[in-house]
Image (tube, rainbow, N blue to C red):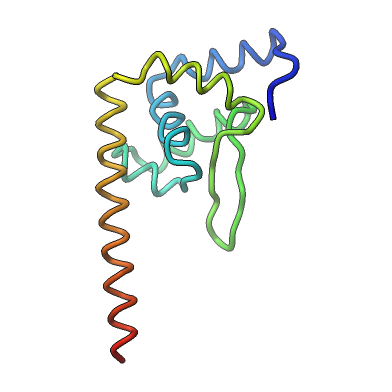
Length: 127
């Protein structure tokens, strides 16, 4: 879904949201990897739960991030309506070293998780 009416109010909310480095880092992870939980973001960025929750709440209240609850987990992702503008923002930041490092940490944690899941599955197969 494309943003049909980019109002001053929405523009202001988006620009305020990306005025804080921590929120930009969170948005970048969501932009690159889709939905993540608070604990995923905490581990990748090495933030406290309080700091992560505060920034996610800010992004959610500004209308940039959506939340989807599955059992006890809440998955956060960028809302479809603002994907176009977030794409534009991150086109300019594509070579930022901090954002690249965050993505590397995500990839390592993801591969470790896949390895652990694989071990558990193979362990259960041999029982």
